[in-house]
Image (cartoon, rainbow, N blue to C red; front, top):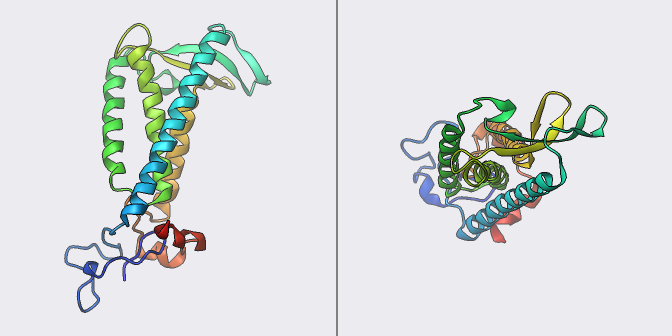
Length: 217
């Protein structure tokens, strides 16, 4: 019988009476799972909590940076490798697309909408964390673009974490990078947002024992 990423057995309707997959199912891929409603609610709570924590930490650290740091003055913490330097970024990461803040604001808004829609299909804890990090990071920088000077859709993002002489970022950027790494890792393991796994990966990399109890929580 089909299973999710935590080895939860799925309802029989996902198989024919003779045990074969339903019509239209791609070979080697489990069909969409019937995730237990309690598990779905737990995953949505996890997703929401991760999003809220990232957004809160990002905004609080930006408020601190604006109050405590002098713009453009670097404060070394680990020699030249890492320090604090306050800048107001009107572009994307690495100051790409400088001066196109309104375009970046619209793109970020679209990303937020897509993430929220995808989260409705959550069936995996890993994806809940990854999407929560991604949404929290996207919202953190979008809030800056909407409420900071010079005005809505044109606001400059507060960056203050200086990595050597390469670039300056913030907590939201860290969350987005970690989310990207998680997405790559989950995809490489064959785990889908809805919790299904590619048969090949499922056979080679069974779920950890403690995952099997999640459906009952």
